[in-house]
Image (tube, rainbow, N blue to C red; front, top):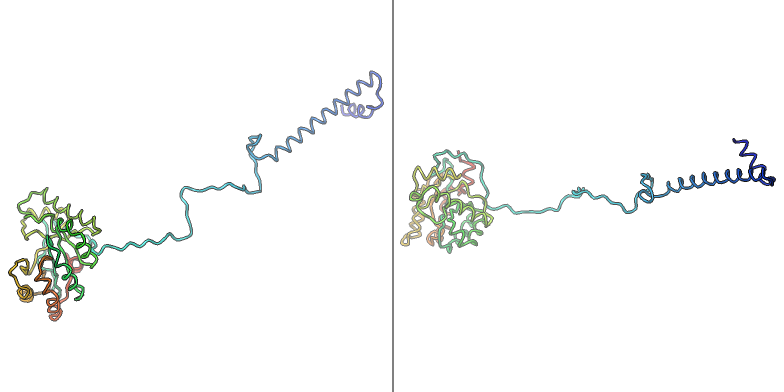
Length: 305
C-alpha cells in the first residue's frame, strides 16, 4: 500500500485519463488523511496548553505556581507570640485544699507557739470606720481578716473592693447574720452560698474555708452543715466587745493586751469607732511585745492541720 500511495503522489500531475482520475482521487484521499492527522496532532498539542477545566477534564500539571490561589486553614498558627494580657489576681486567694472532717472543725486559737496574732474584723453594717482601720493596718504593715455578711457586700461594694485591694483575707459571715442554731440545713446553705456568690460578683475569690458563725452561735449540727459546704469555723481567743456603745477605746486596747498569747485570734468589728481610734496604738503595742499580725489564710498555710 505504501508503494501505491507513493505512486499516486508521483503521477498526480501526469494523470489525465480515467486512470489518471483514479490516481488523482487516490492522491486527494492521501492528502485528506494527512490533513486529518495534522489536525489531530494540532488538537492534541493544543489540549496540552489548555488549563484544567477549560474544554477538558484532564489534570494539568505545571511547573508554574498558581497566581491567585491561597489556602487558609481554619486555625492558623504563627511564630509570633500572642499578645500579652495581664490580669491582676484578686487580693484574696483560695488557700490550699483543706481536709475538713464530716463533723466540722473549729479554730479558737491558732495552733502555734510563734508570737503571731490574727486580727479579725466582722462586718454586717456601718462601713464608716473602715477607711481608718485600713489606713492603720497599712501604716503598721499589718494583716487582718474580714468576715463579711452578704448584705454588707450588697450594700457597700466599694468597701469590699477597698478590703480586697488592700490585700486582706475575706471570709464568709452568712448573708443576713441570723443565729444558725435556729435555722434549718437548707437556710444555712443558702446563707453561705448567697454570700459567696455576692463576693464573686465583686471579683473576690472563693471565701472558703474561712467562716465565722453570727454571734459565735453554733452546735454540732451547724458545724457539720458548714463543713459540708467546705468551711472551717473561726471562733476567737479574745473578744474586744468593741460593738458596745459604752465601750471605750482604752478598754478595747486593754482587752487585747491583757489576754494576748501566741496564736490569739482577736474579734473586732468594722463598725466600731473605738477600734478605728485605738488600732494604730494597738499595733505599736503588739510590735513592742514582739508580735506579728497574720491573716487567717496565711495562718492556715503555716499552721493548718
